[in-house]
Amino acid sequence: EAGVTQSPTHLIKTRGQQATLRCSPISGHTSVYWYQQALGLGLQFLLWYDEGEERNRGNFPPRFSGRQFPNYSSELNVNALELEDSALYLCATRRDEKLFFGSGTQLSVL
Amino acid sequence: GENVEQHPSTLSVQEGDSAVIKCTYSDSASNYFPWYKQELGKGPQLIIDIRSNVGEKKDQRIAVTLNKTAKHFSLHITETQPEDSAVYFCAARISMDMRFGAGTRLTVKP
Image 1: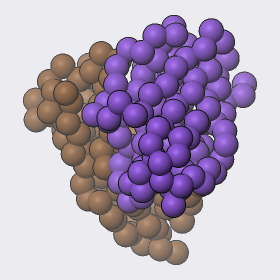
Image 2 (image 1 turned 180 degrees about the vertical axis):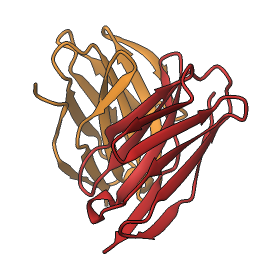
Image 3 (image 1 turned 30 degrees about the horizontal axis):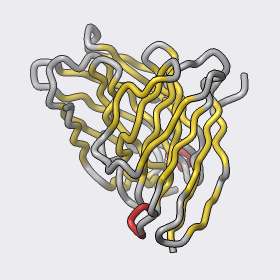
């Protein structure tokens, strides 16, 4: 069974640009979660999608947004990038109560 | 929302010793408590979990204990090995919302 896949692995942007991160869930998993992991910090909850709908969002500004497609894959968009957005962005999918994580996209904002 | 605190932030042990990581949670409605291990360059991987109707669970060298009254749970690793070196995260779930502790960097010295 293929795991959660994220692309790209690394992404370098400059301040003010937009970033798009992608996530493909494990087959059969319909819920997608996005987390931000800044250097030396824990996992901060960003967004939760299920069956194409946004179900919950964390304490992040509106320039963090996303969507879930009919095949349950998901995109995370970050507009007007700021230096502090530099972090590892992790996608996870859920089966029952268990979360399964991808390896993340390392976003660097210069 | 749920708040999860994790201690210590760093832990160094000699190979063969035991390691204990502790977490507390704030919402008594939380009912599922997983532990994740994150190795360098990888996403977090589920290593053990416990539900609120169970006090203890073991899986080989790893065990988790839960005290619902005190709202804390702990990860115990016995006979530590160098490959146990990683960052460990606890988490607590209420409904479909999973919140994580800040992580513990465990170093096992050979």
